[in-house]
Length: 118
Image (cartoon, rainbow, N blue to C red; front, side, top):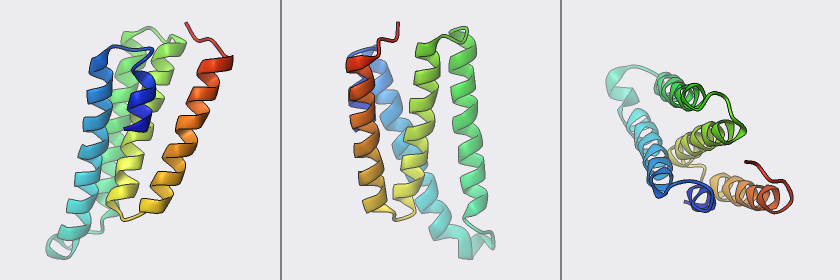
């Protein structure tokens, strides 16, 4: 939510809900993968690979649609970051998720203050 909240100032409100859904969806996929791995006889890493591929494709579509602007690269990075944070929290890495999300939020705020991206 922190990363989505920081993008609210620069982007439409739909981007906040999109980032939130990406993060929660990837978290649910990781929890389901860990829970169902004994039943399906497959390691949780397979689900992680598929989720990361989907998140990467979403980011690529954003960059291509907006013709590779700096803002589109930032949006793609936000999508990728929120997806990976969802996977980390889904795997049980709560403290790491809080620390990295907080650090990323502060870094984004610093960039917004000192570096102007148009």
